[in-house]
Length: 267
Length: 261
Image (cartoon, rainbow over all chains, first blue to last red; front, side, top):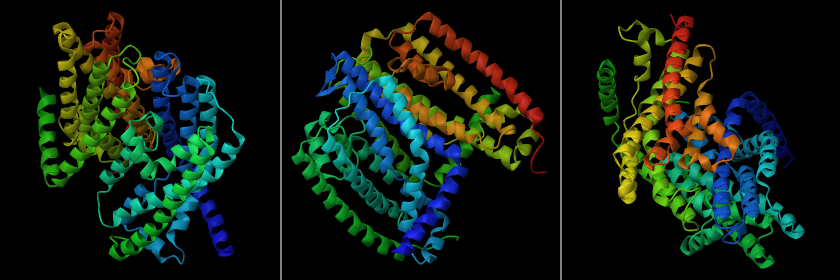
């Protein structure tokens, strides 16, 4: 266990050094992360104002709180592991990772967490500025905010496991862009990025409840905003737990099969 | 005429290169259709709660979406691949070969790479535009069509000049492609009328990164909401930026000393 802690500490240090070297790339990535929720925030603000100040149970201020929160939750749970793997498999650099005596997922997790630590101040600044500009209404429900912390951690794990599985598609395919794009398109609607899930048509809401996307973003977000009842919260944790279990098992299966299929190119 | 002849030659080379990888066509077609489907579904969700968005009706926003796809397609067919190739060639020193050719170097650089499958977006965008026009019906007359054509040309000219100016910076700075990535990311905002955005963002999308001229302004012309000042402003800006980018390109070229040989 202490070996693993040392490993994480060391990996944090190297990732931090690498991040600080590529500051421009980080800033560009941040702009993208801020702009997308901002666009939908603007659109729904306009819709809400046209309809007299509220739409589908959301007031203009609640829309602002929702999309600013969405930006933060998405940032905290985001991974770009699928792009990473496409590169690693295509260029054969995965071979080096396989030679290490520990599972490569540990360095991926450390990498992801350290990049979030570096970019978090920028993200918070953006949230504060957007908060001043759009005047969000935030209902503070103490138990819900407390419960949102484990929900966020579970959402991060869930997203990491599922997206790691998806990333491993690179073992069998050389062009994984189309797969990733399909995944993100589904995510856009089912995780509540275009609009709060409650505003989508009924059949999409049903689909969202079954698939993992909603539980990666919308669930911790709605909890944080105090929009869920205790029973809905318990249900949410149960579904998150089930998906994490499923994700973990499939990750192990896909990884084993994938490494066997991997034929190092170059390297 | 030389422009067209050269563009035709490079297009043929691009076609020949791409036809070796035919599966790409289906992958790109799938990706473009997915993007269009996502955009349409987003519009459907928004317009299930309102009839107008900042004064724009659904069919008008549909027209804007068509323009967004069309211009995005033009950028990805020739502007983006050529400018990326140009930045790369400054870094690697292969620009030397382009400079020795007996044609205008700016022209050669600007059409040097063609991404054939970007035409999918051009076609899809035109399709969406036709559907939107059919639904708008009588309201679009000959005058609107002519203004739309003029604004579309001006918008593409502005975007081209903008990319050329940024890419020319690569004569002095090594990593300018980062700024171009910001454009791609800001371009997403052009799917909605810029008049929706709060002041600071609207100015940013108009003057800092000219997304508004490429998408909103042509769509305004089409839907008859373009005022004369904006129209003249867009034409003047297009002319000014094209001249300025040409002058800046010449300064850059004089500064370039070749990195390879």
